[in-house]
Length: 278
Image 1 (cartoon, rainbow, N blue to C red):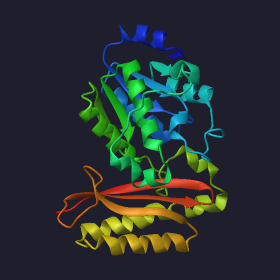
Image 2: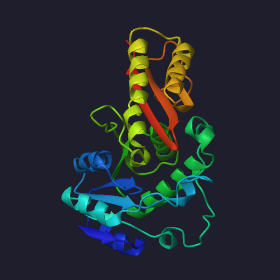
Image 3: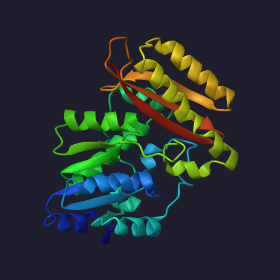
C-alpha cells in the first residue's frame, strides 16, 4: 500500500491502476469506514481512500481543531483491508490559494435539515468531493447512508454536473446496540454512550408505525422528539422525508426516510431509517 501526499504523484499512479474505487474520509477510521472499503473492493481493481479533514465543511465553533488526526493508525487499518493507496494531502496541496475561489453550490436542500444548523457545510462537502473526484478520477465511489443528506446531495451533484463516476450507497454500520458508528461517538461520556442508542430505537418505532400504515408524520415526529427530550437530548430535527430527493414526505409516498439529528451533551449525532411502504 502506498501513502501519497501529492496530486501529481497520485495522477501518475492512476495512469496504470485499472478500474478504481474511491472512499473519501476525514480519517479517524472505524468499522463503518472499513465496510465502505470492503464494498469498494467489490467494484474495482484498486481502492483509493482519501484522508483529509476539510476545513470548508466545519462551521464557526465546530470541532475542526480537535477533530482526531490519526493517519498512521488509519493507514494500518487500510493496509489490512488491501487498500492500494491512501491519499493524504495537506491543506496547502488541496487548497494552494488558502481560500477556495470557486465553490460548488448545492441546491436549497443544503439549507434544510442539517444544513439549517450547519450553514455552508454542504457547500464545503460538495466542493472538496468535486476536487477529490477530479484528482482521483475513480470509476466508482462509496458513500455511507448514515449521512443521508450528504449522500443525496452528492448523488444530485454527480447527475446534474455529468460527472463520470458511479455513486454506490452503503448501509449504515451499527454497534450491537444499534448506535450508528461515527468518529464523534468517542466524545460521548459513559452515561451518554448508554443513552445514545435511544435515537435509533425512536426511529425504529417510527418506522414500524409507518410500515403499519400510520401516515400522520407530524404526530410521529412530535412524539419521537418529546421522547428524546425526555432522555436529555437537544433535538435539532426528526422528520419524515421522501427517500429519493429528501423533499417533505406525503401520504402515498412508497419510499420514505426518517432522518434525525440531536445532541447528547456537546456531541451531535445523526441517524436515519428508510421505510418501504406497500
